[in-house]
Image (cartoon, rainbow, N blue to C red; front, side):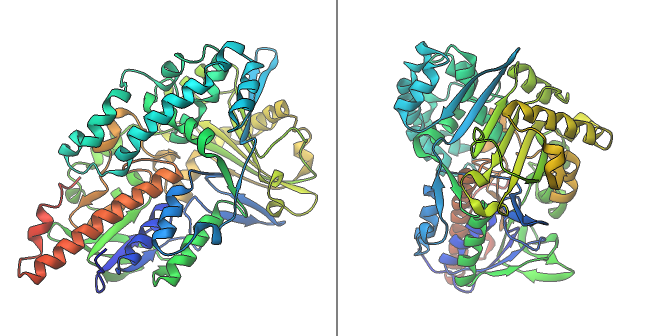
Length: 522
């Protein structure tokens, strides 16, 4: 790769996308400066220590498909395993299905196909016979869609790329994930074992495009991992490597706006000071951060009115509990309680009604990692999907009532006597996701991933001349491995633009000429 020593890029935000992009840009010889408003890297992918010695992941709690990040580290001459210890979980999680009269069944999800078939056979013997066929089909689907997820979609003609045309027969736009799974599994509980993962996108399996059956396949085929020390250990490792590669990381630094020279981004203002750059990359919640930093005239395809009408993911109600005592042996590292009437539960969230019989997810990291709580104590992370702020729910009134409801529902997992054992507690509701973490409308998983907000129709990685975005709000979408892939796309486009600009300058061509043909602005 051509070294671009002398070029300067400003990255706004030290989340997973910003850190991954910084590594790739630094490898290309670019001088990178990251501006992070927090005192810690990682964005929501960070691990915090609470009073009493409890440690919690704030957002993501597990690691999927580490190969992409391993490739990024390898391109920088390093091995990911030398920086982060990843423990593959088996079982990868426990699924608990609620019925009308209590628990109607469980599945200990595992990548061991034989054991998985046995688990499913306990609920639905005929469905167990189709597990291998589901895996084979999705192995093929992933092979066809992987090149699509690796390419940029910043021009309309990219929708007719060879990779896209090859993948079209596997897209089935008229099918949802659940409908696609009905071809293999009759029992709705079994279908949920392969479709609840759409919540990683903040979407319903009954609406989410059938493409995303590959999410569960990725888990079963490639594993679910726990980074020892929490997911923040990955962010810290990336930041450490970036520092050794010469990246200037400025914590507690608030960016006020992006600067432009004509149509081209040429720097930013942070903490009242101007920072000039050849390009700017924004890593943050798209609808919140880009609208705050980039004037409307520089985002003609994503004006305020369009952003306001964009379809958003759900939000989450969070409990971070430091508990005296241990958890029951039946509670594994990851446990998901799937509510009776799951489809009704999801429909309520989608339509803006707060579910009073909600599904929930529990992380008991101490099951694997003893460093997440003091001896004799437990750090418990509880996540409940709820409507985003567009629903108009008064959380100031309902917050304590909903907390009590969640504590009561945890008893279904055998977690009793919580109230008397709580030594630390933090709640994050949708209003705090927006106010404290700059998440638009509290939509934790960013823009929804329906077909008209994917690929070319999602905000482009190359957002305009000299301006790039990275993170869940751009292509390919949300989720750590997908964000890392998006970082590769955004960094590659930026490097190509700067390399073209330098070549043009060497040839005596005005700097704006190659940039005008490098791809249409979003």
